[in-house]
Length: 133
View 1 (cartoon, helix red, strand yellow):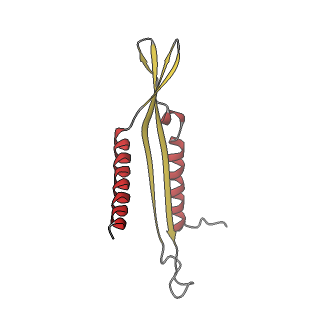
View 2 (view 1 turned 90 degrees about the vertical axis):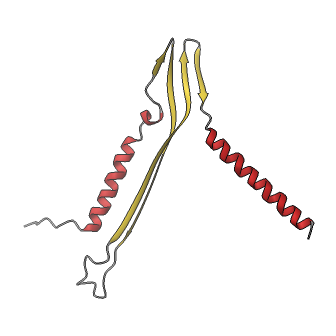
């Protein structure tokens, strides 16, 4: 007596999104942040990374002028996701203890210094323009 009803496109899209999100969440484990230990002489080195995930989804459902006859019209949706990982440090474990060596991202430092220089030039120029008006 109970017939299976077909899954509508909207439900399929939502189910697909949540399945993708769940697969990504399952990948966010400790081994994503702490890499495999690397023996180096009498020490063990463990790489450390910063891992982040972002997801977004949009979905729209609409119907024509007659809602009863336009059941599947106007369906639309989209989604996006991003997973990033960047090295931040190396942990060195020896008999004497643990040393953490940070990894300096020179590109980030360069961008920050260029932004600061641009900010300083802007304010200096603005001040000079106001002085000479």
